[in-house]
Length: 489
Image (cartoon, rainbow, N blue to C red; front, side, top):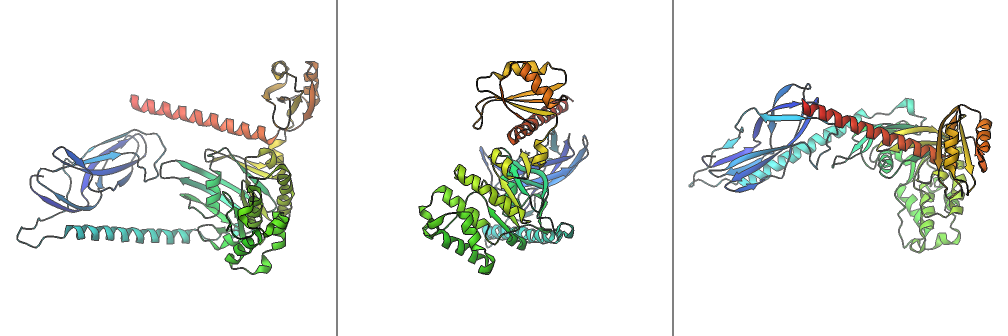
């Protein structure tokens, strides 16, 4: 600036944009340079999204962060463009962007600088007024968007008898991590559904969206045909235990259950307190303060609280935390009997053996996506699979090598000993009958202690996760190759 300048509003810069992709997302920030000092007068970001045919160039005007800028003579401005920003959900596609200036000068909304004799302009008040106006416009826009969203999410009569439907859920956090990526599945009446996946698979995020605790970026959740969002009335027909129970420690277990139910505003006769006491199975401890409870006692009370009122849809996130083996075994028929009354239970758990015995259906997630879903019996049963449990002293490697050479054997996998067996396990997939596979193994001198006609859920789960890992690795390699080709052009 050759002379002192007062800028009020949004400076604008004209850019030429070219990309290997069809959509470009950029973030612009404004920096002030005076002498050797570089400062950022406004800690704001101007996001820009441009749709453009691949390989073509488009000119766009970027409105930079608004404000009141008092520029002394000799001041210049610098515009910084980035492809990521911590405050926004960033795209995950691989692309090469080319950006250049379409005009060498910024467009500045200026006001005349007041004379010294005139009353000084209250620039701070003007800046505050602009900021308040921008905030009000943002709130009005957000309110309009939410009203539009509520109108768009109407009741689905075709799903009125389906306890839970998840459609195309997507959730990306501000750091760009996509925790849930296009997840769809449904749960029917009478089912106990196991939601499985390694840590970070997106299970808890999915549950929180299904309960209206957080909003998805896109996609919908329906409970009995009603769309789910924060405060949805249909959530009164849902019970949940997510990320551990919470109680008033000075109250007894019984008093906590009654206080929770009173907060719902529903009559006591609908609570089914006696059934909840039976689920908690605390005996005389039910009338002791909760602060004296062990973790397992708190967990059982939390499950009982979630089942108050016998909700039609029940969510339990890691319900066996803190429970000992007899308590876990006792919980299994409770959940199965509950679903048998026409209700639905969704269980998130890492105990695959327990899920196999408890759940009728499973949904397997990996890296935010569903990689398998279906009835447990269908996923585990296989006419072409024979599972051989070996004696603890048996080395499975020679047997596996010999079986691979048998005509009709397609694949042989080895699983090491585990907590429920002392010997290795050899799983054989073949076109041969199960009896022929056993004869071939015995002919190799194998000491077999058990034969099964189906795989265990742990094996199926690990196979799906390994396949998903391999697919992700192939996709990453493909993207890297595409980027290399783009750079070589």
